[in-house]
Image (cartoon, rainbow, N blue to C red):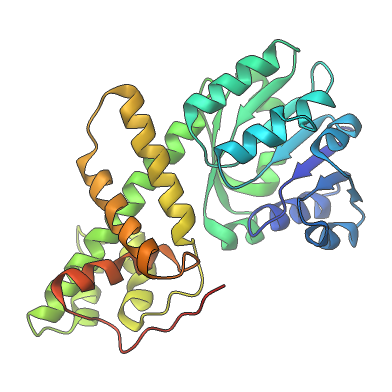
Length: 303
């Protein structure tokens, strides 16, 4: 474990991922916009740094895990960004979910300084981050993927090199397109059952054993039927991912009508409910359209 590791972005996903690297025996240098977010890592031996630039100056491989495209660009290319502290042959691994076109531009800029980059967004949520069972979708050079593979194996289980720069982000966008539309479909199915006077929980049980069964139907049933939306993948993050999907479709000149509709459901939800709700709360927007309600009251609070 000769490589020194940096980790920037210690939120609900980044913190447990960085902790797993520490537990695996790697030496970490870390940075977060809020200093208190670094405390769990400092307690297990990581070194706190004042900026992304400072992290890069001390390390060989630098992970970034932040919220959105502008945040990644600031962390990597900004005045105190990773690029200005990194040396030739350093490797930056961005595990955020952002636009593939932005990833490709950043990779090209870094290549001018002989700094390598992988895009490696993940699926599996905070539970997967804690357990080290994430699915990791990687874009970039094959040689750099192999260099990073031991680190990825600490963080996840299903690790796939998709292709060149940006390919990992495209795979993640495809994942979110499927997830968002499936959430909407499950919500519609349960509302149809309720409107017809049939117990939605029983319908769901029957569907799980057939061709319509899905992970979304399995996991989100309780959240939808009980209006229990406090935990999970936040609406604001899902909405951001759908914005990336629609941006990518616009850049490619293709139509994604189902994705556009799911995005509108999320937009309506964000306009009327806390943005911290789990994305399964999309069913609330569907309930409003039909005046049919699955849950008894709304069990959530602003965060």
